[in-house]
Length: 411
Image (cartoon, rainbow, N blue to C red; front, side):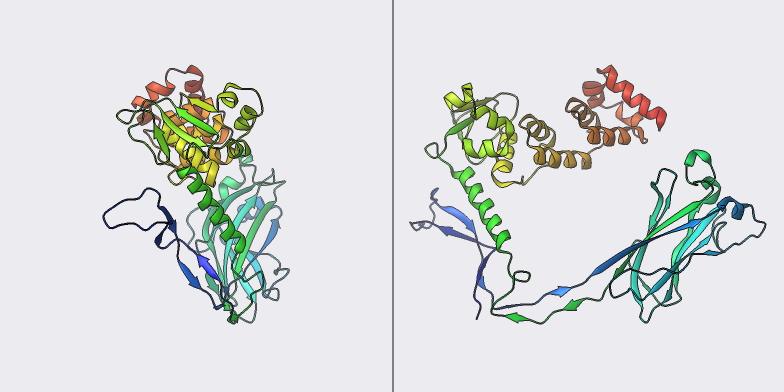
């Protein structure tokens, strides 16, 4: 029988060379998240998704819009997936340039028809038009999979207004050719493989690499949280008082600490940050005194930065996203900066947009700046310019105000 042990995070156990007495707290105890159980067999349920695409070019498209017939139906040639269990099926696109019966005024209709196959097919489709610049436009896609029976068709009766397709500024028609692009995804039935006992092959066995990485993250987290000054070779002193001390910190004054100190390790900091690597590779003050003085960031932010450096993740990145972004940029922690940037994008609001815009401008983040400007000019400008943040962060910077005004003109 194949017996192995998996450790996961569902219960707490204490490990120590001493036992804990009831009603007492021993700070030497190290909490280990663990759940041990034996595994004798395994099975796997699989489902495969097959995706294929097709382009249909309709020449002299404007002539169909000028045709006196009220309803015109065009069909593409049959096409099929190039591989997979659905390779024997056939499909085609159906287009009504001036709309099918029931379509709203001035709308073109587009459908996907399942024309040949022995079985019902679960599929969904995504429709686009390819403009002169070879860009996909007017993208519409099914919200979920549908069951196609042979002879069935599905699509969008109100796909796009046909009178806008012929406008030159839209760049939709290329030499009066309408290019319709469809991407189809077919869902196979779920298959559960036979239960396997004893030995497992590499593909189906427990992912020992993942287990090793989880253990590495856990151990380095404990190293950060419980490092004493004797085990570390560098101290990070944050010279800004915090409302409370984070775990793993030491205070120079227990009553009202003006300095919060973190114990860390040069080798780990240098391996993760080019700034720290340069600092410890030269005869800098920090490398000589083994003390890094930080005056422009809060202790909570440094705690989060060290958490990322040691474990590759931050448990609560939304807690101080703006300052954490500045910290990641300062120490060139690119992955952390991207995580913070994504969190900032999701937190853009009327109250926060001004501060985030200034942050993006100061740190030259084009994506973040573009996102927040889109939010401002997208119907929120009137409310935002009345906020305290606008007057504090943006109104005093003429170039930034000008950029917002220009974006409003474009919008």
